[in-house]
Each structure stands twice: as C-alpha cells, then as structure tokens.
Image (cartoon, rainbow, N blue to C red; front, top):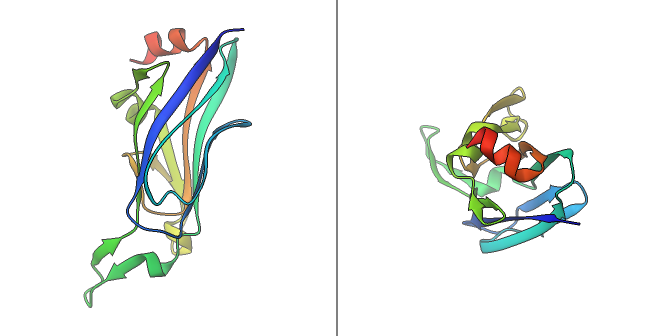
Length: 141
C-alpha cells in the first residue's frame, strides 16, 4: 500500500509545555517541544479524509512575562514550520487551510482563527486534508 510521509519542524523557546502532533493514531510528536525538533510519520494514501492536529497544553501564566502596562515582553511559544507531504512543502497552503482554536489560556471566550504558524496559547491547530494526497495538493496549492 502506498503511504504519505508527513513531516514538519517544531521550535519552542522555553520548557514546560506539552505538544502532541498527530494524524489519527499516527503520531509525529508527543512531548515537551523545547528547542528545535524535526518530526515525521506516514499514513496510508488510500481514499480518505484526515486531520493533522497539533494540540498545545500546559502553558501557564508563568510562561508569559508582562510589564506594568500589561504588554507582553517575553512569551514561550511554539512555532510550526516546513510542513511537508511527501517532501512537498505546504508553505502558504498550510496557513490558508488550517485553523487555530484556543481560549487565551482560559482568560477569554474560545475563538477559532487562521493559523499564523505560531501557537501562543493552549489550543488546537487543525489542517483538514484528503488522500490521495497528490489530488488534495493539486486542488489546494
């Protein structure tokens, strides 16, 4: 059976967070994303609908430094880059086709917005795609 290799680079500028990246039961990463990480997994390329999901948790107020005026001066964030399907970089296609749902770490109402490449709050980034992946790429790139 043919497979699709899914890979990405993850960077985090501090410790203590938890990130899980998976497509169904196929896990790319599950742990503290502190530092620079390259990860990948493979899924069957048979007809189907899928979701690549990045779930960030364990972010607390201690991960964010705020000045006296309430401005963020330092923040621990996760950056997700270079997502590829079979070594074809999604680039702008990722940003156009993914969403980021979070609630400002419990300080606001839940929102869903376009994903910009950075996760600064506990929440979920979702990219819906279908296989065979080359057909999906043709339709979305």
